[in-house]
Length: 73
Image (tube, rainbow, N blue to C red; front, top):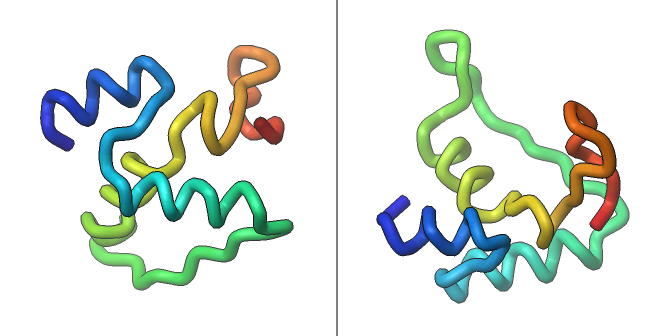
């Protein structure tokens, strides 16, 4: 993420049009399934980058209680 992307993430907004498109698709979906290889006990960097940019708290999900981040937004 660039500095401006991180600042937008903290403000619960997004700058990248492609990320905004993915967010809109996720909000319309009933379920999301992520399939990726496990490399060195973790996900690939591109998958991590996608999740960091697209799964924005306050847009895709909300945290209803601290420690329980996956209530629907």
